[in-house]
Image (cartoon, rainbow over all chains, first blue to last red; front, side, top):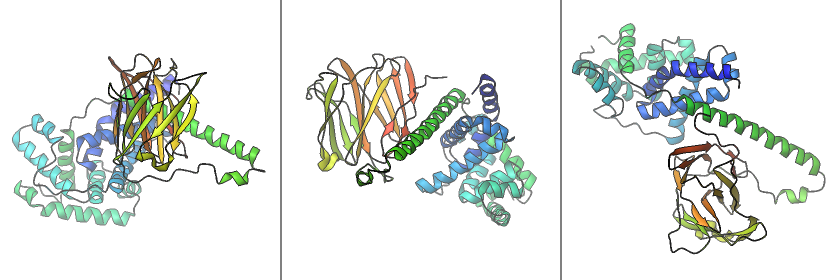
Length: 172
Length: 238
């Protein structure tokens, strides 16, 4: 790969790294895993960079790898999601240090509620309501039908509405 | 916030995720590993081409031998592996020992002669397949930190090789997440390392370190017969 393509990739990764880590964090709930997943996605993007940039939307390519890697993680390792009263440690330490108590409580309650959703509902919420993908784009990214996206989004929102910890934090 | 307000949900998610501070983008690492993947792909294509040529050349007579050739390695189930360097009072020539799923193994090199060396596998991990076989004598190749050779012995893959003088240890990452730390052992004028894993386990990456940090890393091509081939070693930021 020539220096120009190499430079393009470096610029792209520098610019989009935080977004992909946050996407992976939204899906995994663990900052360490999120960074690993994002790095693996960018690595694969680099390995196919000439083709990826020809696609015209390298971000969509990397995003798809992040989503697939997360899905494979659940399939391969059968990750058992534990319901806990408090959010995961990593990431929240950063949040806690970053802001005042009230904001921290709001954010941590929301993230914890997100982690209590199933993997697919969580992915739908992150893609639809954080990344602002359309229902069609979300369906394509998750390899499911638009109807499934609609139903999963509806159920996820209903679950979030009824989440007692969100209610305690004044989310209703 | 009312949760049925999707715009508000977006803003709350935005605030929550923005508060996550990722470590700096590991661009050099991604580039290095991405380059290694490209090399790996080319090696895979070349191997496939070579295999196709070989089949084309030898297809007529040797169907009898076909079943005797090593077939593709079956995927391996969950496994645990350990490796350690021999202690100061170990037998001469012992490069490494360890366990695979709790069963012990040892890998020993005999004194070299005429550019050859006898390598011996022993221990219950090899089942009834333990034994000796000749190979090229261990030698340092200055272009790479470790010149790995691979062999299979029953359902076990052994990787061994001589390390360059600047290498203090080698970290080998496997597909189950295990990281084996290989400490070189001095013998017969070279320093060598070895490790053993079940055939079908994939070697994800090997990284050689000096006293000052990482020297280079290699992503091997895990051939269908279960043996990893280490081709290109890339320095950090390369």
